[in-house]
Picture 1 (cartoon, rainbow, N blue to C red):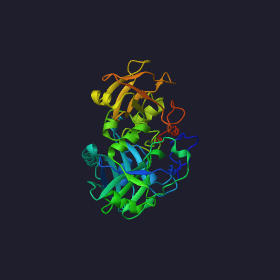
Picture 2 (picture 1 turned 180 degrees about the horizontal axis):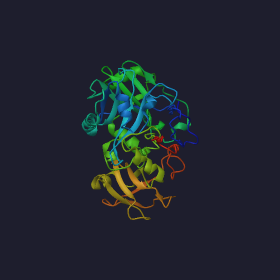
Picture 3 (picture 1 turned 90 degrees about the horizontal axis):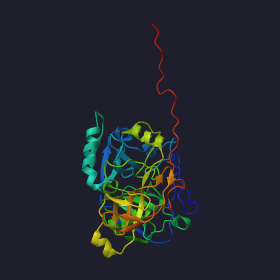
Picture 4 (picture 1 turned 60 degrees about the vertical axis):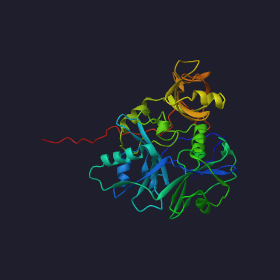
Length: 373
């Protein structure tokens, strides 16, 4: 179960053995959104788990039943390039609706084919199969009314639901992101999923609603936000979003991730932003992604990642000489529009730290026994 939030602030050390938390919301409606911008990939076979464990940044042992780690039904992770940069963010599901040895990967639709080909290319003599999923749909369940401090009122809880045709799991990143739903044929429409959930105070939303909600929280997701192959996992708040494990063992670019972790602190991170203008001005200038933002303290504060309306996310410099930067008078350079940013409620208090456990490496990685002549 998820721990309750204290003082409305999400203070979490992303230890591999931290407990799963319950998602608690006020008695407002939920919003069910069919994520048509995502695709599902099935990885099956007797070696599917070992194969994915060697590629992804998070520890997939959480999907197993055991005492070493707290078991979960869903894990959030990154897939990195050989240079240690994020290629894709991936949700990995172990569901009752799947056969034994099967795992489902949720990925941005624009990256699905490329990721499937990459998984096939990486496979060398392993007993695995990689294929697109057509018989399962994906939904997100989020609070309809945005309130970053909703966790203070513990007056409503949704329990995880598991059946042969339906699985409701807590979003593995932060409690404010709600739930993920996997539904088979028969749960394709909004009306179909209401029969699986006890609470009927659920409205239907759009993918645009989902993006706007994420941007208000400062949560990046998908290829347009992460810009495949450009950012390091810590710049995408991988440690805050429970996407990285540094003691799981080897995976692609693990050594580069460890170097960044040891060097610390992280100078730039993804943060929420809001344009301080009306909709007509915003429509006239239409600030595009990957364009620069400056502040009064420095010429270049960072770059705009993406937006929906006035709300968006940007990768901005948050530290200067290990001191938090107070961004004032932020301006989008290309459009000249003013904007503001803030530290999200769910961030830890010490933004100059990386929230991962210290790694206890042995002094000798190999025990070399001298051979007598």
